[in-house]
Amino acid sequence: MRRTFEEHHQRPVVSLDGLWTLHPQDGTAKAYSAMVPGVWERIPALSRFRGVADYSRTVFLPCPGHYLLRLGAASHSAKVYWDETLVGQHYNAYTDFDILLTNATAGAHSLRVQVDNSFSDASTLHIPNDYFTYGGFTRSIELHRVSKVYIERMSFHSVKRGKGDYSAVVSVFLHALEATDDILLTVQTADGCADVKVDHLDADQRHTAEVTFPVHGVKEWDIFQPNLYDLTARLFLHGACVDDLVDHVGFRTVEIEGERICLNGRPVQIKGFNRHEDHGLFGCALPQEAMMDDLQRILDTGANSIRTCHYPNDPKFLDLCDELGLLVWEEHHARAIPMEIMRKPLFAQQASACNEEMITQHMNHPCIYIWGVLNECESETEEGRAIYAAQLAQLRQLDPTRPVSYASCRFFTDICMDLVDVVSWNIYPRWYHDESIRSYSDRLIAWMEAHGASGKPILITEVGAGGIAGYHDPFARAKWSEERQCDILEEQLTTLLTNPRLSGVYIWQFADVRVAEEWALNRPKAQNNKGVVDLFRQPKMSYLLVKRLYSATGQD
Ligand code: ADA
Image 1 (cartoon, rainbow, N blue to C red):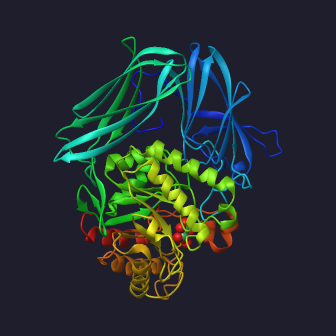
Image 2: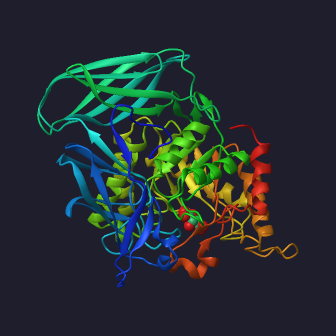
Image 3: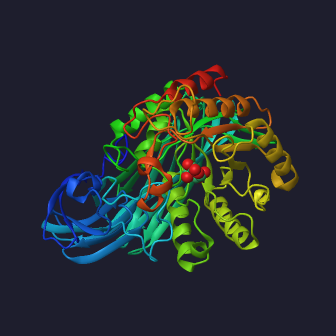
């Protein structure tokens, strides 16, 4: 399943997850049985394969009609062939895409998804980086049978009117595949509902139905208080229900009040982790059990937030954060992209597509409190500023209800802080340089205040140190030892968590992750070793240190 709950009760949906045939274009005629979702690197013979591979299977359609393939992304590019006709393609491993199959015939059909994880000029977001771009069909795929008018998606946000009283603001996006009359749409959540009648839609016409209605006495979604409500849209043709869509939503407010980030009117202190989608057993295709295992540990440390470094996360993971009451900083896919790539027209196209897909697909999740872009890109030049301004404007246009930010490392040179609602910095005192965290953070914050951060919340979106799991050096406490990682994290966290000018910190990072081969020389084991657990989730000494420090401060 794509989500942790059923999105459709009326619409027939079947999962296409399971064993597919995999043909890597590796010069052999070999084929493999491969799990979808999954990464091919978990097949021993393909553990180092970077290139193009074809996933294929037969799909049986029980009756003729209109069908929708809902693909939960592939890493990192996909071309989809239906009966050997190209019917769709997608770039970027971290957002979903739909493919319509109209007037399909009943019976057996061939489905082939050609996946490519190679680095080339055709890929501006997936580049050799300090995380691993796996190859595979990495998120779930479903086959939907849709009526001649169907619900493509719906967006939701809420506006507070009083204690427990909100307005639900819902847009339902319809797509008519044939000319249709007498359409009725109902929308319901909590104790509120609304109806919309549409007299006629032409074939291939899209229509957005917008409704706002009051709800009363709702319990607000909050940190560790995940009050969720079903939002249900149902579509009727000539009085008969032909389609539906269910989502989980929460009623809450996120506001910036001076130097504070406020949730439901209360300032919050972020105690978070950066978390990559990467696991020693699953690559980036973590099953929900492994996601939940991570979240149990994250909750155990007393953390209250996760930053989805550096890309949109699996909707299933966001559902779990909704259901556990964890705040999420979600960001589009970009990590330290060089300017020579950012100035390419293809970068603007691929980045803005990722922004649009991230927000339209994830905006209903109450756990997401902020959107981020362009982690550690060129925010110290006018050329870079123009790109930041364009991307931040796009985020605000797509979702005016949440604050926006970016995580910077352009120390004492950044010129974009005036563009954001929350100022965010990645700093590594005592690891990448040896100035004390107190001295360095005081100096940097003073500089920020004079260069665009004044009057705004400040987050430290990355802080941490390396620690190779199992490497102990209790006397010299050399760098890369677990002991030194604890020493540095203790100084960083005790200083930053008690600085009243800061709205919180995200530790870099929850778990060790694989890195690209090109990064291996300065990453022991070809991993980024700054996790508090290793690639297989074995806790390091720093796990208990973080638990002590995060648990010692207030709930949020
Ligand atoms: C940067 C970057 C992270 C990671 C980190 C590190 O802040 O945003 O992705 O590379 O440095 O480990 O050095």
